[in-house]
Length: 492
View (cartoon, rainbow, N blue to C red):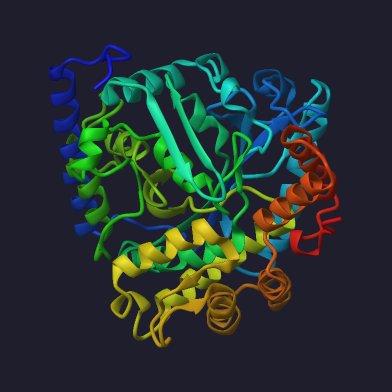
């Protein structure tokens, strides 16, 4: 093993105190579930969108602090890299014209961010990994300033004990080492939150796991990492390796990575929180003043700070979330599967497909997870990441593997439509946004597919790699501003 990169800031006693408090939080969560303390509105969605900042040549622009300082809103915040920002959308009820409303708000917010970025020579790019980012640019100085990011970097590097190694083979092979977590900053995603009751949480999470492969196949948008063409959704293996705290020998022994699909269907939200505590050592063992037991005993609602802090450093693709809003506790499933973009319309279509499919699968009298082995669901997800819309899946009721595009069009889109109906989503929203998903399947075009076609056409016409990628980003940005869904974009 290589020389230890960073000294650990926390001694054994600090880690023991943190673990004890996390267990207190788990006990508090169990008490709240047992006593039925989770009340308030249900079936609410929330969206977070991570965005890249690039210059006119498509290269990353390290100006997020300047852009955010110019903005007259708190809806945006920094992300890990100085060339990224994050937009947090206000939660809203999943009913009526919710998706048209979401799309309009996204267009206004991203348009505003684009204008502010333009004052600093940058523009917004909605993609999973900016194709023009180079490995040489991913150094500690690329990280956004702030104790949160430097502490996370120190703890991951200390846990690993040596440089982070990226080894991904797809159409090409990427093999690089990094002495910080800066490479992780290149991955930008969209997160969909769904607030659910404790009684429904297990079914909704299981449904989200089963749906992850279809989501990824039809929403892949990250074919390039550091100039190399890899998988259709390269962000998934890239993020897994860039956040991996395991030294190689522990990975070989089967120790779980922090970016994790999981290994079983669940019965309760506590299954996930208990696994997170059991399998993953604390990265940020910071103990708050609040004692959750004392708060509960006094009739209050605890923040469960240590549990939520630890949970935030375990990067499940479908993550459980405990939160408190206006003094009311709630539970959410946070879906972290998809890359951002390519357009607002595409992003909202991805949201409609996710929410509808999860609701539809969770409502089925014979749920899919009772008929689909968990290992098959994970294999489907990996196949979708590799091959995108050209993947094939194992699915109950199918004779052998079925092409993803056919499965989605013939079986899953009707389930998603029924799910949106069950939420009370307007038929106009349902039909408009699900038609975008159908169009991608029919034409077999996703954001990743469009990117690779344009890139290979440029190379065939004599462009070198760097020029082809710069031209790709330029055209991508221009077409994204039309908000036409990506399957309608011209490749020539």
